[in-house]
Image (cartoon, rainbow, N blue to C red):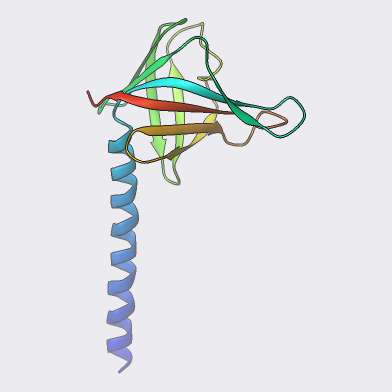
Length: 139
């Protein structure tokens, strides 16, 4: 009987580990493509709210972990996807926009297949901040 329990828990553990790995792979694949920054989350001391952006940036994430931004500032670099939906940007330019800060980790979340939001993790803004993007191409 002890052997049966041991086998059961071993199978359960292996299944859980595979599921988490598959989820992370699906999330990183969902990230691939070109995204347009459409809204920013801001607060002026009170409750925060989403506002449309005036200068639209695009972010292109490739299968080979390359990142290209275009808009007010054009920049190339790389990104690293970690477990728990964490993302690091590594731009190769001296100028970068406020959304891509070297050395900062971002928590990402998807709203369906075509909406992406990311916020600094840990939070850098006193009242909160975040960025919402819409997928415009699957590249």
